[in-house]
Amino acid sequence: MLKKPLSSAVPITVLACCLSLLGACSGSREDVRVTFCKDLISALQSDPEAIEWTGEDNTFQRPEFAVTELTFDVMERDGGRGSRRAACHYAYDALEDTAVNLAYPFDAYATLPYKMTLDGVALSDAELLRMINAEQKRRGRQALQTLQKGVEDAADKVRAGIGQ
Image (cartoon, rainbow, N blue to C red; front, top):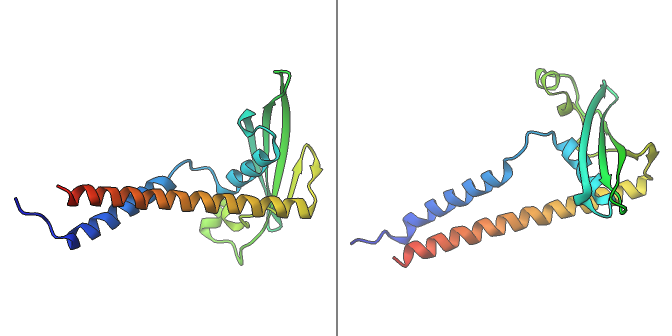
């Protein structure tokens, strides 16, 4: 039985790695701004697993800002549930309206909020900036871990193919 040379395994490995990363990136079709706002809200909770999302309302004040308002229940220590709401405000960030912006209104707005409220109380600019930075670092670490896992899995497959 002829063994394939190592050079033909490299493109297959790269392709497998890319496909696994693409698979890791796919997921819900929820807008990134909504997901980011949910992640910020979760970071504010002592037990992020106790959150149950109950509503989402996105409003657009063209060309000034967009707001995603989220409602959620949180499991209290006594076993009850408390209803809460939060809103993230996003600045308009387009030079002009395009067909894409009209079809997908959020595309015309910044991806990071400039203001956030929790139960009607605005977070300070310093607190919001600290939370945004922490969330971006968490996401960066998560992306690196996913990439590392993909590379390790591809390397294991190459090693297994060479050993045959």
